[in-house]
Amino acid sequence: MPFPLDNSFNDRFAPMYISVDDDGPTLGLTVQKHHLNGIGICHGAVYMAMFDISFAGAVGFRIGKFAGTPTINISIDYLSSSIEGEWIYTDVECLKVTNTMGFARGMIRNTAGDIKASGSGVFKLPKDLEASPGVSVEEVKAIYNAN
Image 1 (tube, one colour):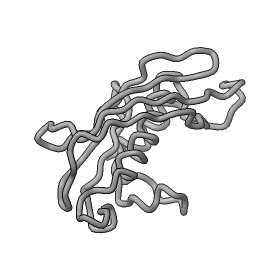
Image 2: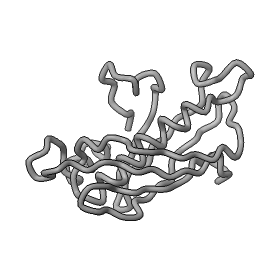
Image 3: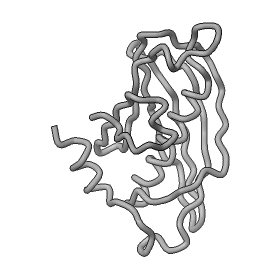
Image 4: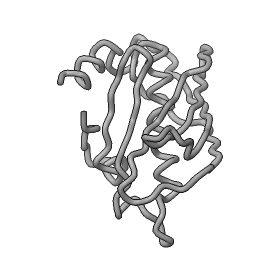
């Protein structure tokens, strides 16, 4: 299902697509002209944004609620470039959650399974998860898997 447009920074990467299954969220896009850098390959910032959204989603999935989880750190190893027309997607997991932080890692792959980038991230959890605004995992699954 298309990732929602909301007049935020994320809209610059549209169209992106998201699915949420029992293993968590997956984010993907077809590399388009506006994703390319000056030498004609997918800009590293696209990979970074995909990781940022997907890692935070994996943490939200683990804690049972997609709530505000600001990024503390993201580390990326860029392994291979992507070209216009190529489908790329995230394959991420939440490794651990503490009282204050969530830790995630994963890869960006293409349809052939080639790894384009690997990375890890750390995210700040809400002080009071129950009281914080957000959406439950079941609600997100219903929204993104309605088709």
